[in-house]
Length: 443
Figure (cartoon, rainbow, N blue to C red):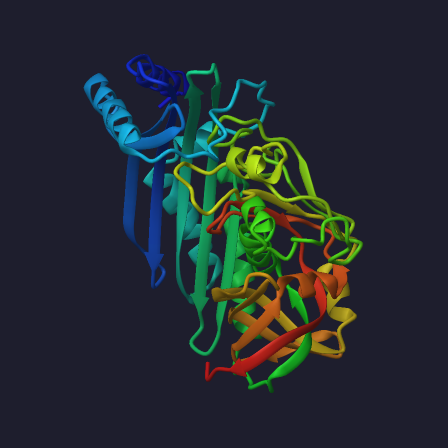
């Protein structure tokens, strides 16, 4: 679906709403997914879908309805359901009203070759990856997506944008060791499948005959996949304006204080060409670069219109699709890079652990940003500045803020990670002074 078509659908929904104020959000997605296991493709999936979310405001009563049928009759029925529900809904005194129109900055990278990728296009790239693993058992998925998003309302908002995303994730199995790789970009051709296959094979080779490691605190090198997951959990629960306002965030009462290493800054910027997404939120509020932590000092959180009203501030353009009881979330996070190479991080580590990624992570203490989880698919022992072998996986309990406060070295290169539950992150590798491993596994 083209943006013009999506906008016409939104306008159609608005045109049949005659009571109060109305907002229409249209999300159109075309995606292709190629899955493989045991080094052979076993599934190709193709999907086209469009959904329309209608929100109606009658006085201070708010309700919504949605449909994935875009015919005139279906849109009219969806609006009718939203109106009927609003009339039966209790008043909402905290509702801030629909957003007024504002200029939307440019943003959203759309690559035709990604949007038009065929199963054959994806299969040829999977073949390249599998061949680069040289006989190891490989499993994973390559997905190509094209998204169109439109937000329109009866106050005059007309925000529309599109973007593409290709994402690849794979695990290569060598029997007693596994290797994980992932890659994301707007352009399918930007993914170097041969290099990814070689990297996964190298991890398997380095991790064979994994040894046990005693629990305790160790210096660690976190590769980008691990860093991105921690950063996204920080955005999800700590940089969330609703959590700050309700006292459930580490930032509550700490704005203006240094909370992490002064060499680190964290910001959210959907307009940066290195990330993926559109430059407005699901209320039609423009997104711009928002510095959340500046050289270690907490600056602000992200807000949608409701949480901004409660906090006495302005929306930062981070509303999720409504209704949303959780609050606003940054979906295009960046962590500042440093000057260290991977080789320099290793060489400076006398005794420590290199972590490729985390698995099965859960929040333990949201206020202290403590999470727990497992290492997975590439955990290595470092001795005397080099990797000396694999380590059986370990469970950790660790504060994200403490991790970012005990950084020793910051990678010079950033990597886009879009294999997350809450958007995309651009992050470097990190070397951390102390990381707490609480128990071990047998594998």
